[in-house]
Length: 297
Image 1: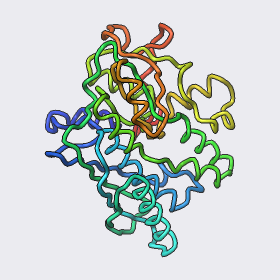
Image 2: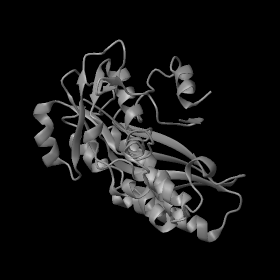
Image 3: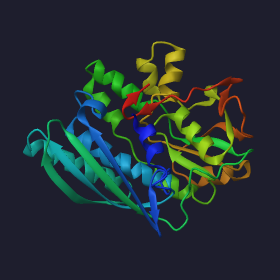
Image 4: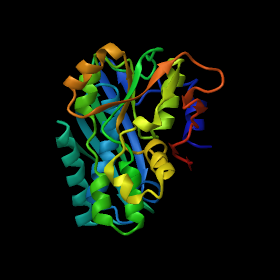
């Protein structure tokens, strides 16, 4: 059973689940677990691991339109090496500082492989859910796609300095807060753009038309892609980019662009739900494919 099947199994007992984070009053809470064998390619530094692990949780806070308050992490490794642990904490602290949050500690343990579990907390009294998109809304993304895919290819090629740099992303907390008044539905792209759009469609009971040609693709993808099809797949299906994927009325686009500190790109639009496919591009169904824990396809 993969992560998505497990979530469906738990849905009846956890009716509040289904967004990037839980909301309790004005508190936003989210947690993530990452493992060396599945999440950190060979050559990933502990500094990058700390940055990326805590950043993943902060990205979930951003996807709710919340400001980030603080984060903690549980750190486990085969042995507790002073340098590695110190580097991890520095990375965790630096990514928190990048979004105006505080890294406030965590827990230590030993384990058969490097593993970390992170929790981030934010605040908002008006969270953005995944469920508010309506036909006519524009589908947009922040930043650029394919950054993590390029990093993984570069790790495999032994270009670890460049790969580590690409693996350290800035969570879109400021953009999420700025979009809170205009976005009708939002989530982060940790599972990949295509899968994220499918999830927005399911939550909002609508369909989406996606424009692959409009995708903002990170320059590093050109360094590693084998052809144009591979370039599109790395940008649309690989995932782990932690950009925001959101819908908003067309009338709100210009104001949203003025309010955010990163580029916003229109990559499609919401349409009436279709029976044959929830997400289409150029008249063809877009597969619900991306990153899933327990199955990467």
